[in-house]
Image 1 (tube, one colour):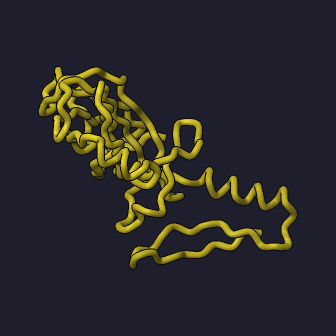
Image 2 (spheres, rainbow, N blue to C red; image 1 turned 135 degrees about the horizontal axis):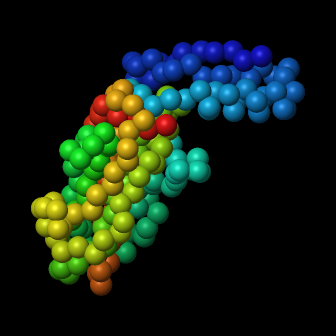
Length: 195
């Protein structure tokens, strides 16, 4: 038997979550949790959940999205350059019923003129997960302002045109120079859901 509850986080009501009653057997608890996860659907992300959301890859495996400053030494970070990681808001593609996002880079404090760049699109689900739906190829790019020859493109066809929250994360790795490893993102609600 599962009990459902609504939890308010930062003043926003969060979808009900299945809780197992301690008298259930282990297989029943596993089934209850699996049903709750399977019932998750794309939707609009509530405000203020950034720190609690989990990122998943296409196979449902948790992706580490920690801030590189938390895992790297201060000396290494102090010696690293900081590129400008360019990205646009996720949006409906002009070439069909698809969600799209782009990535590019600028030199920032870096001196080299080539970087490996890629970007990925994540869709928000009602179980408070950001699920990866598409990544661009990794491209070796000159710094630029996002023109078509200086950017990467991630794209995925929509299942329907209902609204969902999307994030476009970009990763920049400057070639021949140590750089900081942020994966900044832009977030937008797009009339596109991908199941």
